[in-house]
Image (cartoon, rainbow, N blue to C red; front, side, top):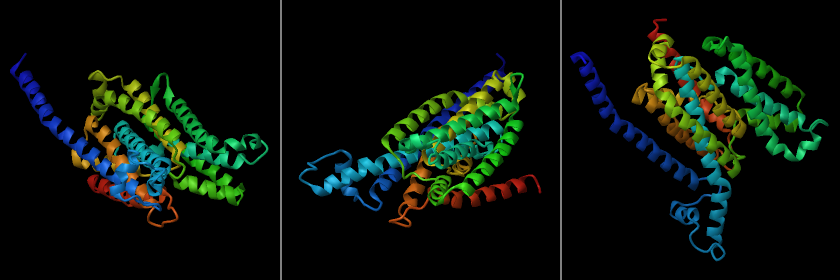
Length: 365
């Protein structure tokens, strides 16, 4: 071993040791912030639960039969608020992590899961189920309306993914540029289909489609929380193995291949994971935009581009952002509820525009 190689190895080990405390500190800080925001979300709402009564309601302390106030707190907390906060955190993690993964795959900070048409495909399937459920075709399934809509959204997202992958793949190789362009085209087709459904829908169906397209967590249940949590757990376990490979992919496909990365397999896994995470999120709460752009970019400014830290940090900060946004959505216009997609768009769209202007300055336009 030469002195140069030994020096490189020492420098890498030194950098690794110096990054470990910082990585742990970042993740611990974000986890603590998530706990604080979640606790605040549990206490506020149309039926407020003061912070001093939260532990008793959360841990089921005391006799609810003798204390009507405790019984009311436990009912609100365990039936409505806790599953909603949990789903908000999970969906925020899914969307932010999918955004970070897609930006690493495309090597572009402007990439977003909505760009590839997966969310639009799920929204088209959901809108179709809303309109067709009242026709003779779906009359026999009307009692399953609440279950059919999320299933249809997930199937639509999955079908869009399969179609995109077949279009972009040839002889075992996947073109990322073709995948993106085909996704934009399919998103346009899906939006046209949604426009047709809006045109033929009656007033009630139109209201349901509109609220679905704007995103809402009002339908949160424990069964949805368990389903989405299992998808998030599997995704995070898989992403642990992909972080280093995405860091090498930033150098280019050729450099990544010569460093031992199976580039085609990495593309396939990344595309499937982005589609699965986005599809599950859409199936639970409708279309919520800009989380996948805002969260990863903020973290890159704070902690750098390394995906081994960026991916878990995106999951935590995405959860914080969506829990906070959902809390604002149900308290700003109480007792009514603002669709959460309006808030994320109001925050994310100006941020996206600023990011575009920053990119224009960097390239000298």
